[in-house]
Image (cartoon, rainbow over all chains, first blue to last red):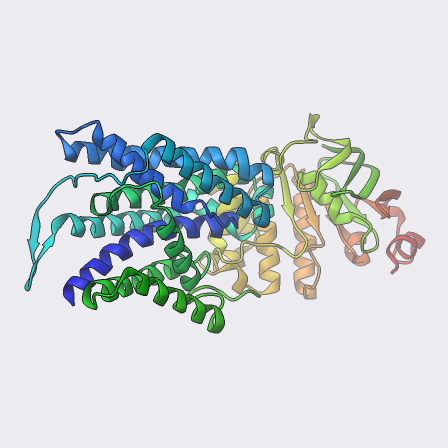
Length: 289
Length: 231
């Protein structure tokens, strides 16, 4: 049971990082980014490329990947924002279609450059932490701690800095934000880049456990949407709570009850259906006025 | 100060303003009056760059602002108090003021000055904007715009729905601002307020300037109010 809890926490931590990126993009820009999972995939694939450059020093390669990959993915996202989303004036329906297109472009680009095979990335270090009943991967514990630290940084950015204030003001009323000298286009590009960067950093953290593959974006996308819907669109606290719920449920069903991963997906989807019926605004979201 | 030359503006294919021209001078209050749908709020938004000008030109102190994005217009020194206040409701009073201060990189001095004009806001700095009373929200909307230290202040029906004591406060604030040399373009439907604060009154009819009158030559029974405003 404790093992299931630990596995669930690892899933929850990575899912929370990915879903916060999606939630930010929707919350501030009102853009439903269907390509979010592909930014996750790009993070993992780029991590493989970077670590391959340092075959004898996995820790160095991984540390470099942790910095370089999110930045590269964020840059790609900013470019996509400027070239595609901005031209569509961030209208909800056209941007959904455009991000579906972006999903396929990124996926096929990864297939062309990376190939169809799943590729492992060596963990930067390998040690076990002895818990009361079993030993547990020290790397997985570090993934949980790193995700918590990054989520704390996101929270601090949003609530304690001027950049966060500008992002929150833009989310509340973008026309008034413009009237008060906020360059909304710049904010949107930054938020889209930040959202994609968070997905990428989550992928870099998890890739030593799950391998990199060009089709790996579908699962995080689905789970991120589930988390964001359950937590409440645009609610950071709700996103974190829902990620914990889904992650722990996944750990419990897969690790403690030995059920196939599909069962966890079905359970999560049922949970979404229940939330949509009984609390459409999500667990911690605000009802529309 | 602010010059509007033969401006056409509207939403998509719909044109609301048709060749409208006005000029607001430093230290002057120019009131804009007209019936609902005449184009008063559209005029404000067009000046701010929130609604694109399809023809004509806008200049502030000789600098052409036509075609500039709204955030660049605000940085030139145009403050905006929109109709319905449109505060950042989930942000605190302090954060709303901070947004105004950041717009033109103003600091503690401007913040203290603005709070000295509205001491009640100082007591509510940590309070969420949407939990303020209607009058306090209007004070905050004006204070937020003043944080830009604007050369020109656009005010769209600032007395709408307020109690008499608050209306008096807003009138006094407008007069005090005029005395400091700020040019004020005020959309107002209350004749008594217009007569107390305006230097000139522009009457708009269906997006066109119908008449511009010296406020000293008007009284509550002036035919323009009945003809163009319907009061």
